[in-house]
Amino acid sequence: MQLRADQTTHSRPILFADILHARACAWNCAAPSSKHWRRREAFFVFARKYRLQTPFNRLPLAPAGAVAELIDSCVKARSSEAKHDEAVLGLRVKSGFAIAVLLAGPVQFPQVLDRCVLDLCDPAVPESRQPYHAAFGTLEEDESKLAWRIKTVKRATNTSVTKLLKDYRKTRWLLRGAALVVGSVIEPASITNPHIRAHALEGQLFRRVLEKTLTSKGLPCSVVVERSAYAKAASVLGRVENDLKRAVVGLGRSRSGPWRAEEKLASLAAWIALD
Image 1 (cartoon, helix red, strand yellow):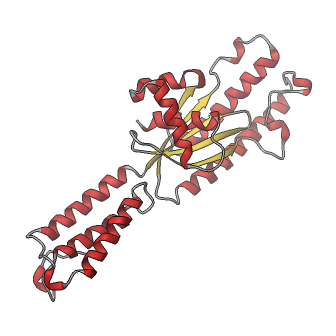
Image 2 (tube, one colour):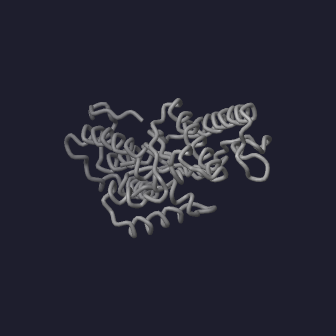
Image 3 (tube, helix red, strand yellow):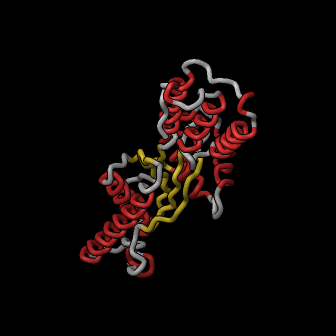
């Protein structure tokens, strides 16, 4: 829609209702999928009815400079809405998969846009889910098997991340980063128990592969340890931990499907990264 400030080219004077209707049109088209769409739609309907139902001779004229003001306000509105286009991907990393939550701002009132499961292994290769495990839960020490399984993990992760980001980039949401939640960042070599060391090695592998893959796609990554996630969020966001827990529970009410501890932690990490 093009707006002109020269009123002499119109067949009739510009009315206040025209400005009202044009403003509603611009506002309604600015970001139809954002959380304020109901308010915009109501305003649009009101403006349209006001213009169509009021007799022409009773419609007030638009004040001087109203068209220029409208154009300026529309530009500012689009700039303001653009800030809400940014989103962050939060991921709770598990062995062989990750729970992903896409969260958008503003940081004071975040909203969940999507939730999905991201494969970090190849379902056709069961060994890639726990690559450092041998038979009966023992630590795998065969280097050739490990190299093949790790290669499978890298390929599967790259495929999953590429598809997910491609789908998200078709929408109006601009991903500006990712935040990973992990169970631990302990060095596996410091663990003496072979079985526990196998789990630590897998946690390290999936975290590093996912982080490297996301970074290679242009998404900077941060890492949050599960046990300190709420304390870190309280420090960054300036809110009490109990309030954050209630707020994170509330985030899931806008979505259908599961909203378990993994989804809550993924959304919390994304919320931290939004700040």
